[in-house]
Length: 210
Image (cartoon, rainbow, N blue to C red; front, side, top):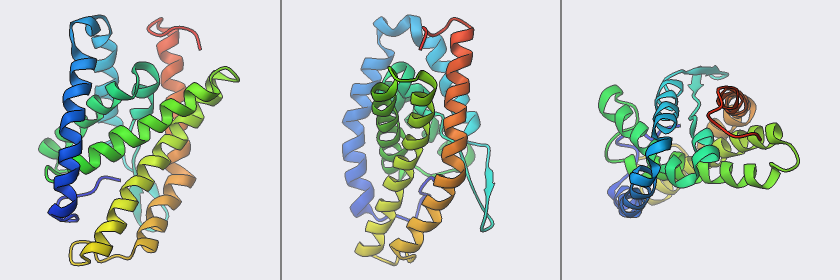
């Protein structure tokens, strides 16, 4: 789901950095300030868990693989701002330590995986929570990762339209290749992961009742 370095031109990566930088500043101040000291252990633990699960590749048909994000849990528990800050940190560490994604595309990846997806997950969970906490968590995880995947696919499609030398694959092919495994496999696993993680937090009394 990450966009690797070299797939996007500066005409896309620079505006993405321009949009991401002020959001990073705002979300970091809001999420890691003195008033947030009590929640930092759980926030850090979930961020570390997100780093781990994003490194687990799920085989999908076609000889490729997909991965979870763990960002829906962060958004549901702490809000989309905290999820954006933490997911961006995960993406930065992956780029520096593991060579996944990249630095030039960090803004794009952070906006797609750290803002759009978790934002959708948070909205879905808030909308459905009164009906069923577990359904809300599953739907949030499932639809959140679909939103992230679609956002990344749209950016790649835009790059193909602007300059195919960076992204030679046509948008319909990119969209199908990304959304099919996300809808059929990754979204379901992300939803189950979200439900299970929230249940464990409640069992450990680190989170209030649903």
